[in-house]
Amino acid sequence: MKWYCKEYRKTKRRLDATRFSARELAKATQNYSDECSLGGSVFKGRLSNSRPVAVKRLSSSLSWEALTQLKLELQVISHSRHPHLLQLVGCSLVLNETSVVYEYVEGGGNLRQHLDGSRGAKLDWETRLRIALEVAQALTHLHYFCFPSVLHWDLKSSNILLDRRLSVKVTDFGISPTTIDLAKAAGYIDPHYLQTYQLSVKSDVHSFGIVLLEIVSGAPVVDFTKAKDKITIAALGTCSLKNGQFHDLVDPHLILTATSQDLQQSKNLARLAIKCISMDPQARSTMKEVLVSIKNIIFTRSSQK
Image (cartoon, rainbow, N blue to C red; front, side):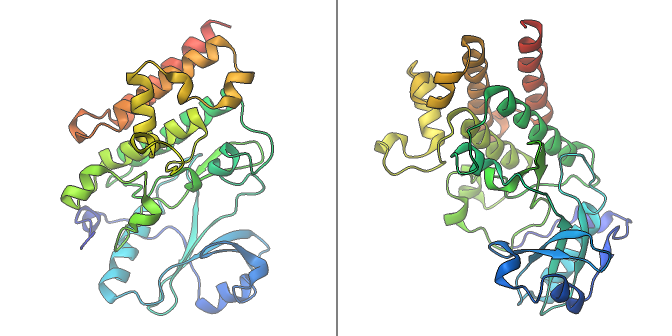
């Protein structure tokens, strides 16, 4: 399966990031020691200028074609700067040791950790709504203000980092997978992809819709303790709204702490999520439309205070 984006060949931009040697990154991460591990293939490093970074090791067996594709993608995303996108710092591009270096986000963990309570107190509604807005702003920037347009490919709550002030940094965007790991993507993957093996901007919209349902419910995207027709969060959200049983979807923490106005806004956000996850990609909202809808929800909140 090929993910090569022909549009990337048209860009004349050069890589706007630092080229590191494999030796430099090994030194920065103490030879990729367990002490520096941030989980999976990501390690905390410290450059020679003392700057902290996150180093993501990619496959050690990239083909020449895959490495060429990666170079083109990095040329594009190195120019994709936005306050809510994780900044690319540099890379090491050799066949047997390929790594991508990002800015290091201090202290906040990721959205999934905050939704399940593993980072302490659960998020209040105002914070959740702001996070939804910031992620939408980041995706809209990728889709409409980058040339060529950049797909995220793998949006999920664990790829939405939060700093100490709980401000969003979306990570892992723009680098196309050579294959999709269906186990890791379960619950997020665009159903249309399973039929066509093609991803598009509407695939990102679908994944964002799933994230919105997570924000509203706090629930995992797949839960085998649920009834068969509600195992996925997409099914749970669709059934709950269709049957007028929103209380089955909304996070119990919000029921206890949120105002009636907050709960109505969470219901409106859930309805927006359902539009995003339509089985028909053409029926889904665009990210521009989604962003406007979230801003309208926030405006309503502000005007009623």
